Amino acid sequence: MSNKMFVGNVSFNTTQADLQNAFGAHGTVLEVNLLTDRTTGRPRGFGFVTMSTPDEAQRAISALNGTSMDGRALTVNIAKPREERSGGGSEGRGRQSY
Image (tube, rainbow, N blue to C red):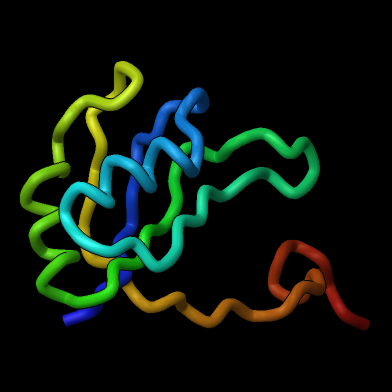
């Protein structure tokens, strides 16, 4: 089991410090990463939290999944490995190669 968690349905008002405090009540937080839009810099409403052990991650999931933070019910679960995406280009997107 992993110690990295996906945290979804995060309010745009929630800060990394807010998540650090909430998850820190259930163990040692190694990293908090709230994702932002590259273009606008605005929050995307989700992020990742890494705890020091899988047991701490499981405790945090049990305690925080579905709880309200800044008026939103958090979704907390083990992060899935990132899927490889094909690199750019327009091949297969309606453009024809001649």
